[in-house]
Image (cartoon, rainbow, N blue to C red; front, side, top):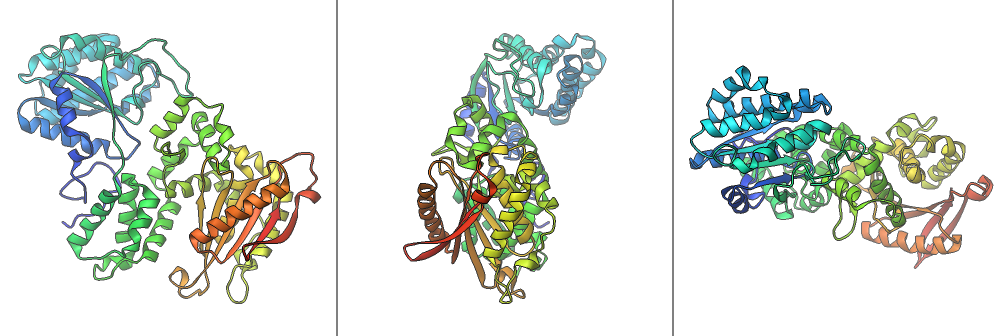
Length: 533
């Protein structure tokens, strides 16, 4: 069977293009931790390759003959919603079944079904792991996945029962346990949903180390895609790789999903004699965004969490001061989810997330904007008439800003989101809208790419338009001067031939007649339209 890019579930090496799984982290360090009988944590954002790596670890450890190792996913215990009398038995059942499956020894699962269930929930896991260690000739190692899916008393009980047997390792308890999840299992931050602290002391103070699995490097991203060329002979335009890196920043699911989209969902590319162009890639990228695939849908669901809200709102508005009221834990939590990176500065993790997040936040607005049709804004030469489009937005914003802004969870970013929803409604299916954000930049950069030849579409000549969005902070003249310089800088970076600066005045006592205006401006010989809203 020809291998392909994996966009769902763990890697199967015989089926999927993949990088060496044990090279994703410091395998030598992990083996040393296990030899030292340590209990430790591995965490990474969703769909980063954690499960694939844990399974590869288990296979390598069992193949060595030195250990009896089992992988177990206990996410099913989440359904107990913090009730340990249901959650712990569910976790124990999953662990007992997994040990039978991966060690080919049914004895422990039989003991669990016949005797283990009779113990109190507060002692079931300790007794299960104790029995496993006693009936197994080699030292036992447990790789426990989705630990942070548990909440409340179930999570506390699980951690404390593991701690209760720690001193009896390895003769009467696993020699080493690895806890894996999206977040680190912090000693003093055991929380229910909504960030309510539910224990004041440590439930897992035996943790030796927290390891974090990172994304692919740029070289690894390229190497993974070139496995397709090596297997099929199909070539990628060299220009794709720089775009792929900016879009994904090596996030493993994105790298694989984009690969699958461009090599398979694009039916023309199934003919492996056909090279894949940059436009093919950009079209595939847009299809992936519009598909609202499971990974992207899960990411969007996190946007409603209060801890995520504060961090992302600051990024969407560019207002660095918005972070002042946030805790370090909140920022770390959003980074653990994979939504942001903090070095060298705080920003949304990759360019594709920059597209997905505002689209998701403005989705309802985009689909319900009335009386706007793409054809109204297309000139006979098929150029977008941007002055006409922006004037229409000014009127729309005047009529609906107050009522529609109330419908946004991210109210501080409502003007920018409403503008993007309006543009997306007009451009959707015709051209492409790209966004850039940066904390402290106090602006949002938008780039419209519009095809000038309907037959060639995005493969032909393009109209490139920059729109810079700013909130009015301070004196208008100063904001305009700063905004013009920022707009021109962005135009030069992206090669735009037309530019507009939109300044939102959110002061409630200023009338709409004073907020809505338009005037031409220029900087260094480049014409820029300036619009008030």
